Length: 415
Image (cartoon, rainbow, N blue to C red; front, side, top):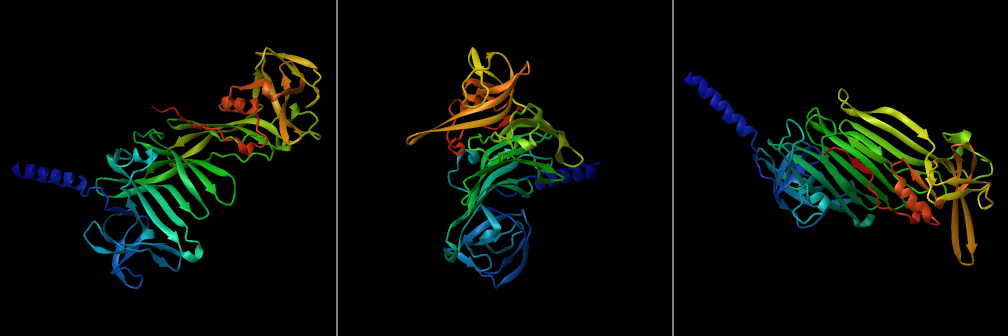
C-alpha cells in the first residue's frame, strides 16, 4: 500500500511539474515563426546541427548592433543569439523569430498582452502575449521598414501557437481593427474573432476581412475567413458599405446591401425603362453559416437570399414622379406605407464652379404603382445598414469615395 501511495504521489508530482510554466514570458522571450537550423555564429556560413521547430519558445541572449543584409531576399534584419528550451545555444537571423514587445502597445493589443486565455484542453490558462519581427528592405530596394506583429499563445509546457496581427511593408499594410475572444464553436473554450483592414499603396481602396480562429486537433486554425468589403458596381454615388455580421454560438448571419448591374438583378420584374437608366440596381442580400464539428469549419447553412430593400417616407406624404428630375407628381405615398426599391438613378447639376447631385429611387408601392421618389425623402427599414444608409442619402456626396462612415460591422450576440 505504501509503495502504491509513493507511486501515485510521484505521478502527481511529475504531472504538476510537466504542466507548470517552466519559463516566464518576459522581454527576452521569442517564438520561432518557422522551422530552422541555428548558426554557430552570426553568419550564414556556419550552420550548426541544432534544429528549432516552428512554434518553439526561445530566450534571447544577444542582439547584433546593426542590421545585416540577406542577399537572397534583399532585406535587412538583426542577428540574435538564442537559447532553446533544452539549453542549446546558437544564432538565428531575425526574419525567423518574433520577439516579445516591451514597449507601450495600442489598447486593442495591450488588453491581450500578458493575459490568460482558455483556448483548448491543452491550452487552458495559456499566456497571451504580443511579439514582433522588425527589419527593412535593402537600401537598393528603397530601405522601407518591414514589420510583422503577432499574438502568441503559450501553454504550460511552453508550446506556442500564434496569429498575425499586422504586417507593414513598402507596398501597403494589413492591420487588425477588431479583436475579441468568445466561444463561437460551442466547445466551452474561447475562439478568436478578428477583423483586419488591408491598405494598398497602389490602390485607393481598403479591403476588410473577418476571420475566426479556433483550436482544432490541438492547433490554432482559421475556421472561417470572409471578405467584409464589397466591390460595388461602378456607380458614381453608390455607398460602399461592408457586410454586416451577427455572430452567435455556432451560427453567423451575414447581410448587406449590394449595388449590381441590372442585367444580374434579383428582381427584374420591378424594373422600368432599364435600357435608358443608369444601371445601379439595389438588392438586400442575406446568408448564414453554421458550425460543422466533423470538418472543424463553418459551413454555409442558408444560401444567399436576395430581395428588394424596403423604405418608408420620412415625411407625412411624398410625391411619385414619372421620371428622375421631372418633378410633376403622378401619385402620393403616406408616411407609414412600405415601398420596394429597385434602382438608384443620379441626376447631376452644375452651377458655375459648384456641383450638386439629386438621387432618385425607382420604386413600387404596395398597390403596384411604379415611379420615382427622391432618395432624401425616404428611409430604409428592416435591414442592418438602415441608419447608415439614411444618413448617406439625406446628403449624398458628389463622389462616394468622400464618404467614410464610422460603423462597426460585427455584432457579437455571445455574452
